[in-house]
Length: 80
Image (cartoon, rainbow, N blue to C red; front, side):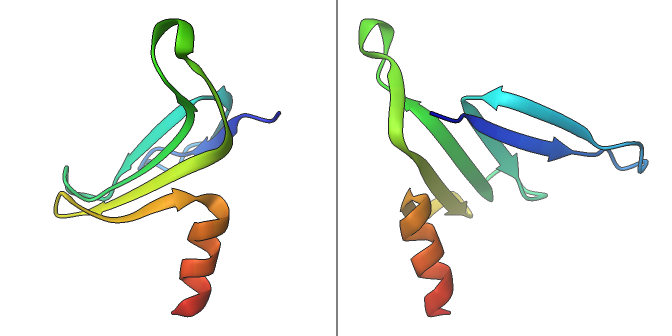
């Protein structure tokens, strides 16, 4: 099963960095309560394991406005 990857670049416009084999990403959208979270794992300790489908959560002003897997996310975007 594949893991999450991300391409990031700092505000100076330097060469983008490609990060692979990630399990969790939280992206803050210029405000600490506007967040997109991508989480590939679930559980704790011995129960910690990779999810079948990556979970995505979107928060606006600290309020959860979307939670689901990537297919749910794509369907939600198609509705708008």
